[in-house]
Length: 72
Image (cartoon, rainbow, N blue to C red; front, top):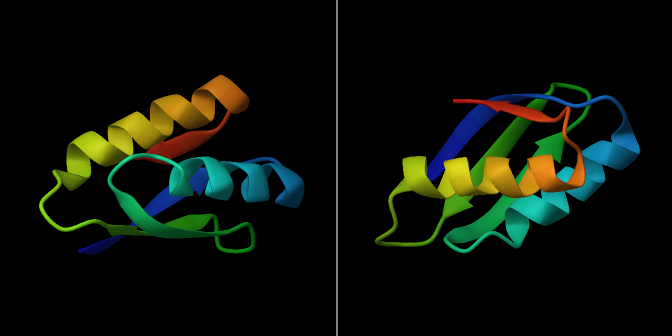
């Protein structure tokens, strides 16, 4: 399953860090974050709850950059 979310990130370097953090979240198969569009496209592994996984990814990102936001 793939879903797209709006994000708030301050710079391209931070966007890359957040993309890597989302990709490392359990249940995420792949993620592509665009600083230009301020959106992240997330592909989830089969059989996971996308809402729970994206909330975990959001929490993980906030540990790296506390002002980062994924709008659910």
